[in-house]
Image (tube, rainbow, N blue to C red; front, side):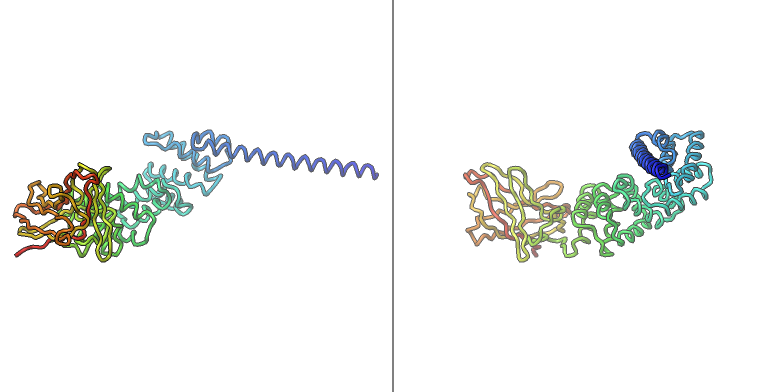
Length: 408
């Protein structure tokens, strides 16, 4: 009896080991099949679902694969059937719920479609198709705040949605109600807000509407960063009107003066200057830069032997009249025929006058001169021009201050 009992015990242990080995093998096989099916999901949803028919999410992806711009009625019915099967396998398969919603909408049952998409939104906010449908549905109901809520969700979910949604949103801000609602959304501080401001400033279809939006943000203390504002100001300047550009600049720079130069002592530097700011003009040969300082900065330039050209510019909106330009230089020691000069021109091209910058050793570097702005010259440019020098060291120097005041 003892021998028989020992034999049965050995047999039971052997059977248990075999069962455990088979269980591990089955689990391993399932893992391999699941991994294989997942790898096929993006390439061939039907094959992925066939490999793992128990996986509701794969079945949902298969159902969604039928939905194209030219889906036929038979394909809609097939998609609906597979989506229902997917939900039996996995009631949380968002893609299946969305497919059923689209099928319901296609069949004219908008109420059912809205129920399906509301359920899909409760399941997950990471499905882009669900968010896009929700946006469109809110728009059809003229629910601006609802549409922007789903915009926000979609843009938070994936950066890839920016390519789809930014152009639409940039066009939509032509509508005042949408602009105001979007300002409220910006007040919540979404991560995508500065990216949209950058897109709207540089690529928005209507710069004037974008300017209204930026102004509205500014009134709420939410003004976009200066580079975005500068981009829009320059777009307005070239493609809309100088006045439109100035209006935005005036809001962004409250202390800006229309009847004179701005920042005469180079106290601030804007990395992305607008046309109304001091703009250094440089290239691979001529070097030009502003070194700002709270009590007064400096503009400096250098050019090799025989090279000249414009190095600094600011757009002005001076009323008609006589003006006096005054300034101070440092380090300028070229011959008389190679000294730099400030040139005032109408935007249309007529030159109004030149004021030479004398050698810095003369009169402590001070220079001055008068120019007259005629009535038919509403926009002007003030440009510092350097002349080619024969000196071995080329031409170089600094401007410490330059101001413009009306005479009389």
